[in-house]
Image 1: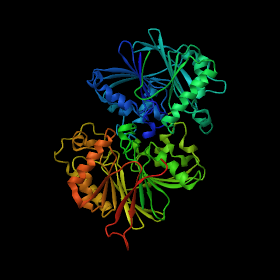
Image 2: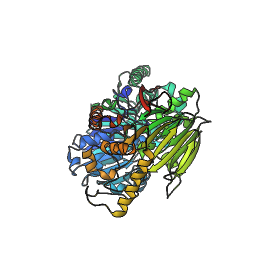
Image 3: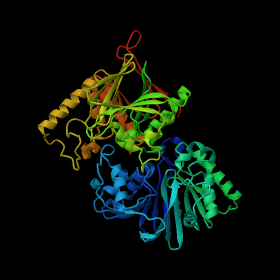
Image 4: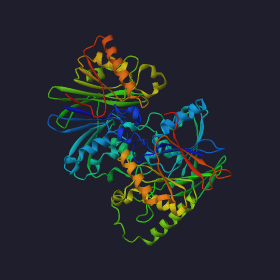
Length: 284
Length: 325
């Protein structure tokens, strides 16, 4: 699997010179499988540059397909969807999986995004591509794009967000964004999902000192991310993700260094730490 | 009167080095009018930093502000939940937008932040939020500032606003298509008509009236902020998207006798260098008939009132960066 980051920011896009290095687009990650299939995790504003880059492939000719995994439907995880050019190309096929009890509920959530008060698209029916919706049942593995996928439901403030584990040829990628653990830490299901991940992309919105005013939002600090990675066991590489909109590039640098120190203190100095940045590519 | 640009982009925020100079945040303009509390036009992502600036200027956690919304497409409201004064008790926000046939304004804004789209519902914020529903042609006052509005040619209909205070004036006209090729109201248009094809006479009449209303609104204005998202080529492909070219804006500005035109609502794909070129071409074409600037984040414009000691045509002074960035 090859992972590429298109948006690494949380909450709201944060344009400006102070975010040039890590990027100001909201959450979007693409995964190209060993067999060349495309999986996209979350559709923040990073989905727009991703979509433009795909227009030179089969997806630009109406002969492409892709799997979209949505962690949840807060704006910063879906706001790029109507700006993803391949979705307008007739002949393309998309399978969208998301945090809903049924396929029609998931479809209804994205239909609400197209409401004519908010969007000139009016309804999903005006998108050209063929779209299939599936609600994800946590804990129940499914197969998409030739990859085995499993999800667990993480607490995210008053809501929940799905964390996804993608396995192919004995390699595992985990995406766990937008999670605020209770004082007891990650659930047994979450730790099992993260266990042995070659790459764990984890919510690292802020430093612990910024947690207090933001408790309700259900997000992780770098300490939460480090603890989750260390507790899960067997995690090889922790990737920091979903930065606070007010965090400058320098602040993210500091967070990455502090996370490395935290892992050393936790007795897990061997876990590699990278701060996700737009255009960063990882081969798993 | 001071006008400050906090977000100048259309459609979707575009972070990255190619938009650093003009800025990647979506639509938001602040008008500091003498004798009035802060007036904000549109609540794209630019309003996030404006909210912080308002609180830091006043040195407290609350403020009183008035927000004029051109229309409720995402790029004009997506920053509102990140406007920090909403979360300070004692803050007062009055939101104005065009009345809708099918629902109340409060319901539209409430659905922006409802589950499962956003964690903090509008009903739970500490600020006192009032809604004022407008009809085109309406006139009202925000303390010492006189506000007028008229409708524009955009899907689901947008409003243009004019603010007059202390002898200075500004018009905000975004988003709108020109008034020549297609009438945009509530119907979804999948494929545009052929440009140059004759218009339905009823549509032609509505468009002519709409343009006359806009010219009226812009008459003699010191600063006209206008949707210039498209190049002529882009407009040719997407006339039904509801955006104009600089030439359309220049024609309205000259017809109305506006003093300065601000190109605004830049396309997401427009790089800073392309925007520089567009501005230079406009200036070369128009010459001294009209002042033209391209709005950029952080730009502050001081509109000097007409009166003894000032220029008879009013002066536009671009005074550079806004504080608080």
